[in-house]
Image (tube, rainbow, N blue to C red; front, side, top):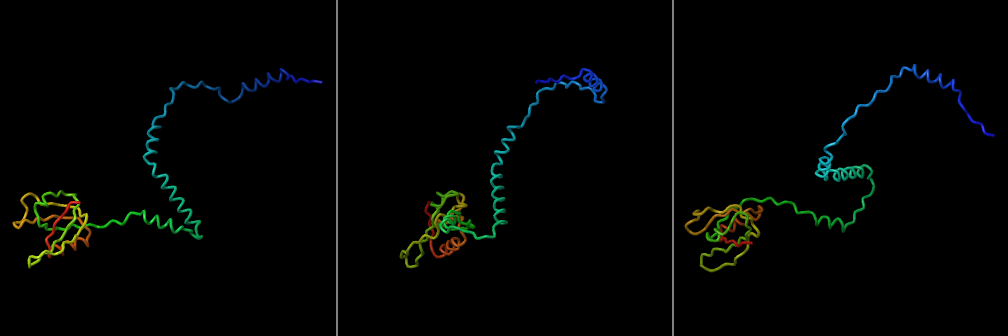
Length: 186
């Protein structure tokens, strides 16, 4: 037995009339617009690429903070890994000073240019005319300044300014008082 439902047509008419009297206004047509084009998408990507170092740094900071707060437990460090990490760290920067040094041979000094690396060798002065043992006073010293043409002494020496660590500068000044100094290019 099949029953079919057919609505009463009078109900449909009364429903239509009630809808016609509703306070809702009729819809208006939507005006046509040009297609929307978004600009700056490529620029945004370039900014992200330029700032690529910030995100990993922020993640590391957040991880370190979370570990510090949650930490409180034992820290297990592998001693060999720690020693290897210490070896890879760069040595602390050594503060350099300018040391004026009188080089005995002015012709050698004319070969030097600022930025050159030199070894300074001291040959002791002997009042008896005997030769003493020469020694290396400074290795890998950077030449900061050289004399201009004609700024040499009558005895043939020339003043050179070297950038060296403070202890090496002290050794150079001491050797310059008791010995004649020479340089070799590195």
